[in-house]
Structures are given as C-alpha cells and as structure tokens.
Image (tube, rainbow, N blue to C red; front, side, top):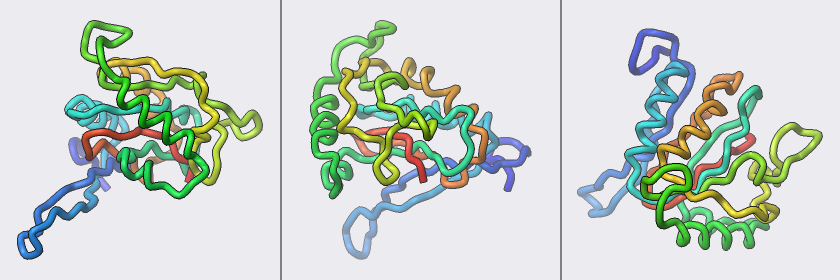
Length: 190
C-alpha cells in the first residue's frame, strides 16, 4: 500500500470513526474508515486530528518507542469506558473525575487546558514485561495514583509524538483518533 499523502510505502494505519445519517432508518450510524500512511505522514495527520478535536481528552503516554509487536494507541469514548465490564471500576471513576477537572490554563503554556495527561512515570510498570502493568490488554487504571498534568492539546501531542514515531513495527492494527466529544487515548497491548 502507498501512503495517502506521498508515494512512499504506507504500512501504518490511521483509524477514523465516521458518523453517517441512515436516511432510511432516521438514525446515526457509526462506521470505521482507515487510511494508510508512511510514518512521517501518519504522525503529521495524527497531530492535526488531535489539534482539531473539540472535546476534552485523557491521554496516557503510549510508551511504545523501541517496542515491536502488537501494540496500538487507541481512542475510547468516555461512555464506552463507563460501560466496560471489567475490574477497573475505580479507574473509571478517576477518568470521569479527571474529565470534569479539565479547565483553566495549560501547565506548560498559556493556552486553554483540554487534556488530562499521564506521563510514563505516572503509570505502574511491569518490570519484567517492559511495558505498563496490564490486565487483559488494558493498563491497570486502578493502580494509577498520581494526578495528571492539565495541558493543551498541542503540548500533550508534543509529549507523545516520539513514542508513536519510534515504535519499531508497523501500526498494522492502526492508531485511532478521537471521534466523540470526551474520551481517552490509551496504549493497548494486543
């Protein structure tokens, strides 16, 4: 496959959630669309889509730089997380609380804060696995004790850019962009 922007090989996939009106049933239908990119244009398009997003986000540092294999960085709508049947009930409460707390100025510049950002050191690590502690394929949200930094989207994207850029494999399963007002960008081990 070719990159959607240039003629280089495009093995990295960016996933878009698309909402369309179903005129026959008078309802909104959500579908998935994806595009292939070279790494350079994937990062550029991803940054642009994050900056265009109008809602609030919780971002967990991807921590996939230097890794290979089944990792992705995915978006989950806040309602998807609330409805998860999992052992992350306390983590879900923390997510809901942090979305509501996003206000004021970015801690790194004077722009409006729209992101609650958890850095690599804020998330518990599995010392043997070289990645965050996970249950199933999800990071252990209940074990996160630190408070997030409140940032604007531009400052938050700068913090994750190199982790996404220096992932050593192709994004075969894609990375996804926000598709609803409020949600979470979270690393997943597949």
